[in-house]
Length: 230
Image 1 (spheres, rainbow, N blue to C red):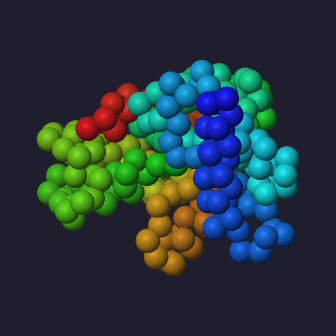
Image 2 (image 1 turned 30 degrees about the horizontal axis):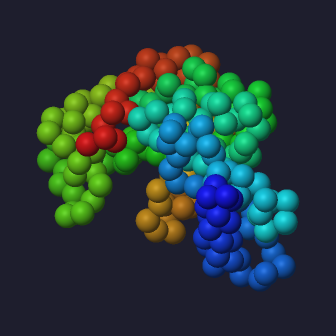
């Protein structure tokens, strides 16, 4: 009985939230995602059951979750059990681990992949230097704490050296890298003004990265997801 009550309460909360993002009650939300998931919930994924009910009721078309930064493979089980339609994943030139298991699993199960953090919290735009300082409250103060910023800038310079002479700048190469995997449906880079929106969207029209160039980018894989733990 307690589980039933909890499920009803959860349904009320989710249902209330869904209604706040629907302009007209007759129009369903295209995609509703929970940010972020954790492996512990795999044993009893009640939130996904509620979202499945909302989908059956026509209130949402598709639903999914975003991966925990430090444990992205934890969601593979959910995909194989058919519990989600979409998945938001951290995948970029530095963070290539999803390509080993997670992205192939999504492709097999028909789960739509939304890539987040394609610029590695802005480092893959090439705009950061060792002297960069972030405003108070900016998450990147922790993400690039200690010697992390210095190490990152050094690695970015190596990527920039590899793309010299190509038709891409660093930001374009970062986006094309993320889009190149066949499992990826879309990429959601951070954008602060209309100019950035136009520049990032234009990358979709650029030629795909060649095989030789992709090999060079693969060499820059850098396992550092633990940074998100502080």
